[in-house]
Length: 54
Image (cartoon, rainbow, N blue to C red; front, side, top):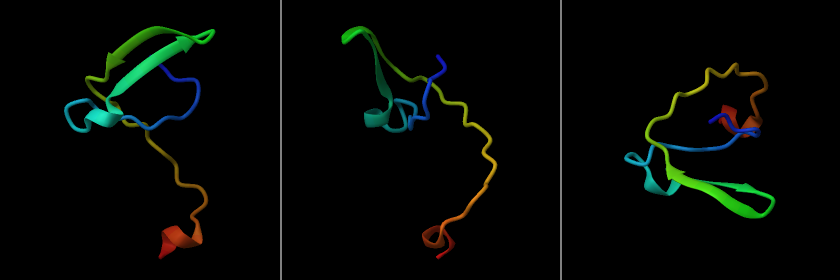
């Protein structure tokens, strides 16, 4: 599954509250499940905020 917007998830074994998902279409739930593994995306650091610098 590839999300259409950025989202924060973890595998269910590492962090259960972020390891569940539900897919909705036209206000109806069409699928639910748990995340077995996560492949992190390589990020390119662009702008660093002042709070992050501290």
